[in-house]
Length: 53
Image (cartoon, rainbow, N blue to C red):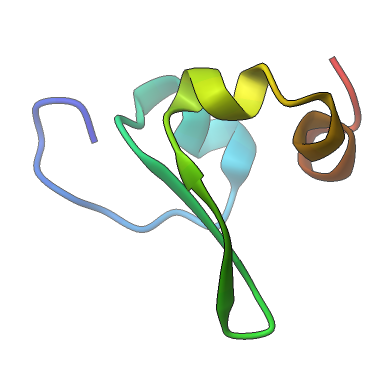
């Protein structure tokens, strides 16, 4: 989290604004790794996890 070390947040809506890096896990496997911009630019991920833009 920006300037505060690391953290784990399960609510993506709360995590994105303060995250340097984003990791999405499903079924115990990493499904996505990138920056908050990467996830915001990915229409598929936004649709799944944020309900669209």
